[in-house]
Length: 193
Image (cartoon, rainbow, N blue to C red):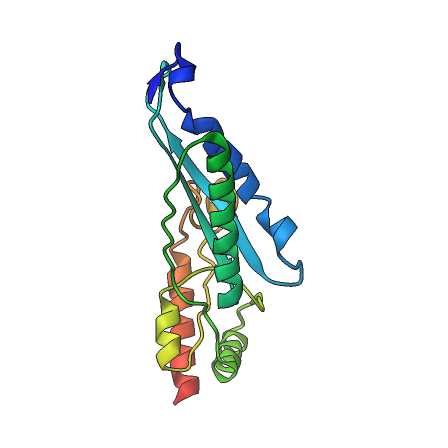
């Protein structure tokens, strides 16, 4: 770190981190077959506290998701190559922390049919998604027992300022969805026994 009036005596990590983040956001377009499902997102960059002080480090955060463990490893290798190349070009170093999150959620066909039957029985509409990139701890249960993860719509644009997905600061939970969830769970139980 150092003072902004003496840039030759320090290495400013902010433009380096911006270069890394921008390059990382291009990895999928340049290195992954478009037919493969993968996600790489840079979601945070933290650097410095004062306007007149060059920070001593920058911290970049992000997420990689894919349905293929080998592709996950390949993407992490690309991340490492990009960090190494850019940081080396600027004469600085980096530290990469690789944290593997939850496994992929794989729903079971029989249980999917039961959930669909329950929705039909109760007259609830449904949207079927063949694949989703969300990470869930529920995946550990599905490694042990057959099952399905499904979602109950809890947002209601008529009761708030519009529709906003979860993880959005404007999301408003419509508690009427709790009754729907209970009815679905009971119907699934009764159809399963």
